[in-house]
Length: 419
Image (cartoon, rainbow, N blue to C red; front, top):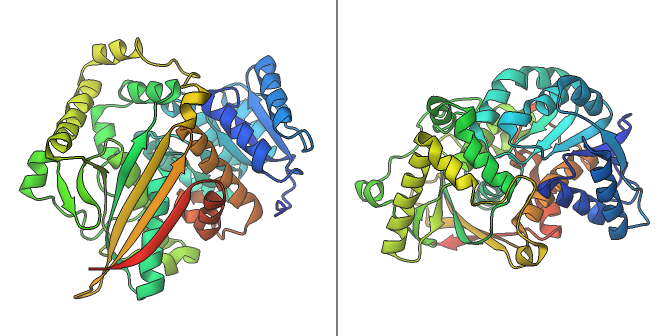
């Protein structure tokens, strides 16, 4: 499918293409995008960017090769770059330290924007500062479009779509679980996690992960309270999913799913897809047994407390992990795997039906992030997504986006189950 006519020099620019995730994003575009795509790689080092261009050429020598754009981390350079492209993908993190220039530039230039942050406090800050400008210019801004938080958002969307299309009903509640995960975090991811509490106060962090903190409208009911047993143990026994425990990414991913819920209530082109007034979302992780599940829950609590309140602990951890720009080897990445599962109940009295979804991906989690971002950009380039401008979510891109992911290795399957 050909790109839209847009009058910009480039269809897409990858900013931060010499980093660990940026390189994979450039490689994926070189391998999978139409050969006439007009694109560029941007960063501070011409020498390093030339190496990435050479790598892209070995992947597909018959395509238009990327141009090089030298760009520093400041408002003027990023605004000039944003004005040249229809979509900007930025992988330059931690975003709390380095991301605001690109976000601001795209909002001001009317340039569509994709990133892979998992920093909910930063996302909330950017929404407050720049969403009104993005609405004014028509920029479609989609943060948290990598492994955090696109899969969760897409699975919640798919579950609600299944209930709406097959039962003609809104959705009452959704539970998504990380069923299986084999992955090693990169230096960039670890730097983001360790730097989060250097960049934001505890109160800012807490405020950003409160239920529906990122939603443009408040929820009339809030979120259901867990049982006393679940509060004490972190364990949940969920029909069709089994024994589940705490997921350390739950709050970050839920913030985006809950924003989707609010956006679909307001955005004219998405109101028919609104999840429902009684919708709730919960994210958990598969537990092998009771002891493992309880250990997961309290381990996450202790690790979180140490990261928040003990700066020397963060300093110590930095000595033993990958540095920013580094990550696991290509050989190790080939063996990585993730599987998600989820269930949703219709908002119907006495219903004996339940929606079930499963999604899986084999390969590097960072290549998955590259795939998720690249095809968000492709959807914006090739389809009329009917979004008017502002800060959106991956699921706002709809069926075309889900189909592209399926074609590129992130397989999503859903069905109805009888209870």
